[in-house]
Amino acid sequence: MEPSREYMLLDRKQILYASRVRAKDKLKYYLGYQVLMEALNVVLNFTGIAEDGLTYAFEYMGLPKWLAEIAARAIVFFLL
Image (cartoon, rainbow, N blue to C red):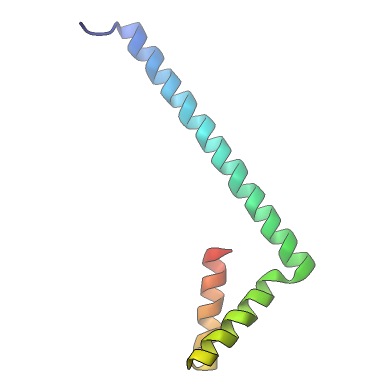
């Protein structure tokens, strides 16, 4: 026995609503994360400290300074 067309339409509406709710929650989480990271960056120069630490670690591993700085900036950009 097949479900009625009204039931299928209602089910699709519920799925669309649920996906919108999930998208809104993800957007709120992402924006909250971005605000927190920007606040840390302004107050503590968080990004600069992370880049400096990674640059030092890469230089310690033997990378040239110019390459270590680029790699550190790329990692911080993608992770933070």
